[in-house]
Image (tube, rainbow, N blue to C red; front, side, top):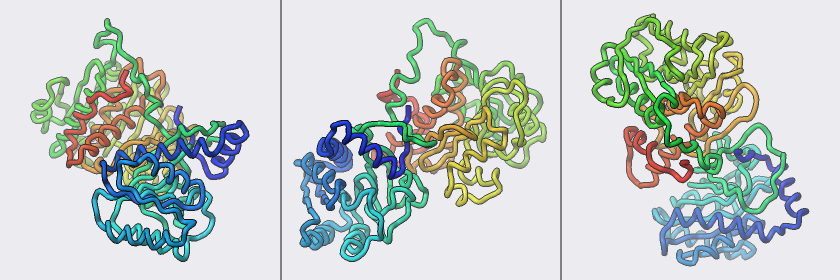
Length: 480
């Protein structure tokens, strides 16, 4: 089960339950500091310079413990009970300004900050931000309100934030992205869990241990579903290819691609594992397919009206799962699905979501959870899963829990990555054995897509969407 996203009051209540159970704050601090150090080790190499800023609260103690685990780095620990620490920090920042391998561990302020950062503290935070050095924030970037994501006068701009015990609500605000950077959760630090979670849940790698389940040795392709990909038009044939390849990476039993006659040649020429059929509209036999992927590369103009009509009919009536992306999102009629229709997944980016909701992308980004709820409500809510792409992709329906993806990076901001995701989801959801836990299958597809991008990004070079398809096929520790 994903981990709950908590506000400060709920986090404090969790801490109080932990102390009441006999666990000491010191033991939790030791584990938290070790978790911070593990991330710092990933972001640095032996002998790299590391400045540890340890404030007066528990965040400072977490940072100080992290320093103890970094003996093979060139660390400088500064405790701010000493007024001379301010000058020493500025001197270090000046010496290491712009150095790519230098790292600052920010343990100045935690979730208890309730007033603007002022005086020498403000000057220090500004100096850190201006130094051009990567920052690892402990629990929450100093100066950021952990509940709202608001900047309290000034706040650290971190490259990565290691939040402790649970993700805090303010860290997920789009307005806080510049301060938070990459968000990682160190959840297992010894705090007692509880039922204080609300609607939002953070998806973890541990949620997919042994998933998808190992296939039996006697399995055959008829047991793993047939997915139809309706995609591609003249000038956009690559989207059909990427969606089909994404579907094949999920390893359904069969993949069939329906594409515009004008681009049939280049699509068929690049796909050896899928059946490719030219199509200009007209009825498709929806009883043949366990899942559909509709939309990648379907031009908004120039297609036969029959194409749109059939896409909308499949959406409204097909008994299999239907995944819709790209231009086809704009074609879908509002209102409940037909009797007997299967589950539905829509995968808009914020701009597409804004068009569907009659608002701009900025308004969607300011309330991503609300946008998911309203989108699902356009089709009666029941049976429709919304995957709102972007930083920490949201996965949810009109009601119920909202799952928040933990993987992915800005490298996914390139044409075709959404086509790969739509195809991959369709390939997963075509498989009868995975549909029993529908939300988990969708979340796994989103998580795996982001994890593949993270793996590519970690190699330290530019990568393309074609490589993303290949990375989806690489083994990860959760594979069954």
